[in-house]
Each structure stands twice: as structure tokens, then as C-alpha cells.
Length: 157
Image 1 (spheres, one colour):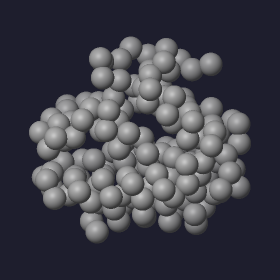
Image 2 (image 1 turned 180 degrees about the vertical axis):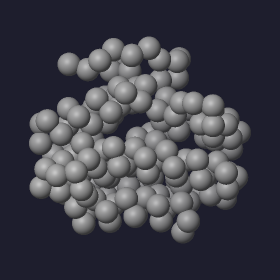
Image 3 (image 1 turned 90 degrees about the vertical axis):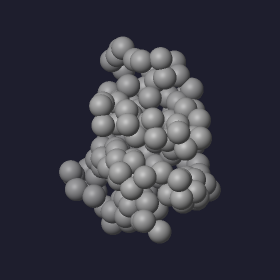
Image 4 (image 1 turned 30 degrees about the vertical axis):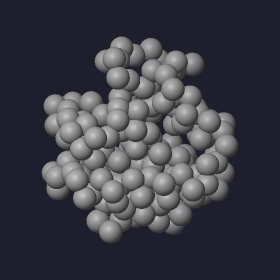
């Protein structure tokens, strides 16, 4: 169903040299590795459910994005997102994520926050298009545009 992919021991969604500095900074700020992964994953649920419904094929596409970004199918992170796309976690998850980002803004450098925002927004667009865009076309619905703007705003409020 999903392509197999080799992972590092953390199973992180955040890979690459510039992203490693982000991970180092977040860990320095006292953020636990499992929290970092959830912080990277929670916005995906917010975007996926922006239109209020997900079809089976769209759910599959979103899970494939996880695998493409280094999340092992057997991992807790994969199972968590799988639960979120089968049962809408609602705004409560997004509010908690936003609060966490607000707290992080007090401790992390501007560079780390910018990197985290870039990763978040890039993946949000991937999920928005996997979630069908608007009426099945490769464009965003107003709800998806608003959800992505809410993600951006969380980093600057």
C-alpha cells in the first residue's frame, strides 16, 4: 500500500541539514522529540479537515505524504495521523498546537521559527492538494486557504 522507506532512529518528519539545526534548537529549548514530531504533524490534520470531509483516496494520499517524508508505517506518529484523518480531531488539537507554538516563540530563535514555519506551510500545501484541492482541481478552497493562513499567523501572533 505505502512504499517502504529507510528512516533514521527518530522517524522524524524534519530531515535535511538546515532542518537538523531546527531540531537541535528545539531540543535545546527543552522540547521532547515526540513533541517535535506531533508539532510537525498536528497542522496536517487542520489542513486535511479544512473542507469538512475526507474521502478514502484522499486519506491514502495523506498517509503516503507521511511515508515520503520519513514517517515509518509502524510508528506512533503514523498511527496518530491515521487516527486524525479517520476521525476529525476538531479545533481543539489546532488550538493546543497554536498554544505550543506561542510558547515556543518565547524561547526559539527567529531563524528556527522561520524554518519550522516553512516546513509546516510546505507540508500544509502538500496535504491540501492531496485532500482534493477545490472540487478535485489543483487549487485551494477558501477553507484551505484560511487554514493555511491560520498556520502562518500562529508563528507571528
